[in-house]
Image 1 (tube, rainbow, N blue to C red):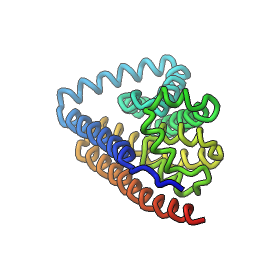
Image 2 (image 1 turned 135 degrees about the horizontal axis):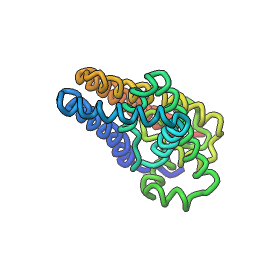
Image 3 (image 1 turned 60 degrees about the vertical axis):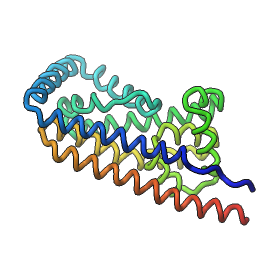
Image 4 (image 1 turned 135 degrees about the vertical axis):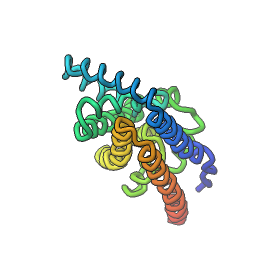
Length: 234
């Protein structure tokens, strides 16, 4: 069995996710601490709330669709819309809508990998990232390893690769739902903290979720090395 490539690309993916999160939290905390900017943005949220109330089904549907798209493509993000969802529906409904949207998007990436195949996936993510990640995800990898990977790396990349590998769909969907839950909760409570102007809470949530992501990445990297070494001996 040939040795797996060095995981430098995996490091970049894991650190990029954390860097984007921390930048977002710093921007939110800064906006929350500026009374002028915060008041202006709350005014935007009030206008958005009125628009959504005028078209409740369309507003909720579009939020879920945009959340799904944000889970499928790295260049798309729903973060700027979450405060509007929290302001309009409250934290509980926002959590459910965002979670369902992200799960739908993750399933979409899996479906693209499984049914459209490698040409479609290579068009969406870099070939180097795809090759390196494929080399480190055995098709028969146990559920805990897949769950750790879903938490540690951007979910859209993992979904494409697991779809290509034809990893069992129900196990993938279960790992996806569990992995997205802490990020959903963190994102919604970031939005709620911004609405309340709680800059320190924003930074605290950002630090907690960044720590979770990096710690999970370290555990996955250590565990997968042992798993691949064991597989090579059988």
